[in-house]
Image 1: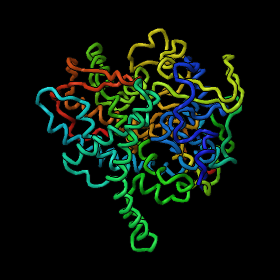
Image 2: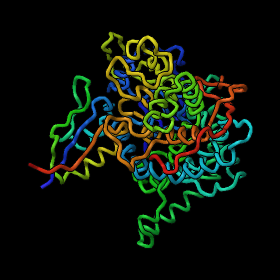
Image 3: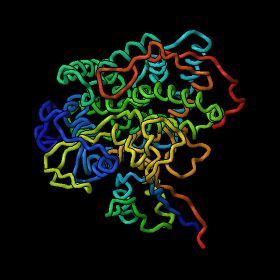
Length: 428
Length: 71
């Protein structure tokens, strides 16, 4: 096992020390941010290595070098296309269809709790948590998850970080005892049966907990709580849910101003461009903290000494007019950047810590043509279904979360009223 | 006789370096900060397993592997 006092080059699982984010230098141009993301001279400086370390420390975000690669290699099995298809079509699909059936034609619905309920099944399926199959069980589960997750992203929270982390840590312990421990016992028995030849490979669950338990040799190099901290890092439904309201508002506004594009609401490629354009304006991760491991100078001339912290300001860099043009602050799904850059821009980061869930969220983001069986991406898929159901923002009552820097809605009332019949066959 | 064709979408490549770690003889990080370089764009079929892993590990799906007929 790693010595906790020596890991992270001197920090520990309680590193609520060091400069505040407001005291660090901020990189704000697109090219500075990309260069720092890619540079070997910087390592993760937040994401489980600073204030959030008690909640997500030794998680994949916090690791570097060989340990980090090994962790990504183990977890990549959950992000294969066949797994993404299963999450999309067999987990989220039925939950979304049922929720839309229930909501259709009624009065205003708050999109946040609506999406929370829809994506709860995804979170459970991904993590490997069993038995969340009644509305009451779901509510209890989501209450604990809601208390646990702010500590894992505390670097973006505006409140007292120590208090937030303390509350989240207490919730994480309840979560571990109530949900992870029984799920772990069941999976350990299944893995043992598989090792003894009593169970086939296809009969083992395909979830993060099972994947971790089958790779104990790797995970047992850290402390025993690393399993629950790693689970806390991955909340696929939680991240997606937070940003769909912005997308709904922006797409709705766009087709009102550009009625010639209404027919594109059936086009997953268009919805993917809408999603990435919206994420550019409202990044799920507004900034990242990095720490220099050696003296280094960026191409722009900015110099850093070993040990210096720096903030990579994704929010401002994503509005860089040298890259996105003079109207960079406006939503335009047909935007062609002035420079050759990735279609998703900085939405999923860059370099070794590029978000492992990029394809799960938005589907094919390279220039390669997607195959007929490729996943559509949970966000474009969800947007298509919402617009098929005639989702319309009510605006009145919508509220942004003032407690953190993520610019996410806490309330977003919408109405559902099918504007046109859904196509007879799936467009794929 | 089939071989493989390996291509990288230069715009999608985020320089994670995972492909280089899986197959250092086939992929190389560009020292100038550009996209990852494929050293042998038509590698033999027996590398398919490793290539599929490199493809899966790439979070931006910049790598594409196809089977082609050898001329």
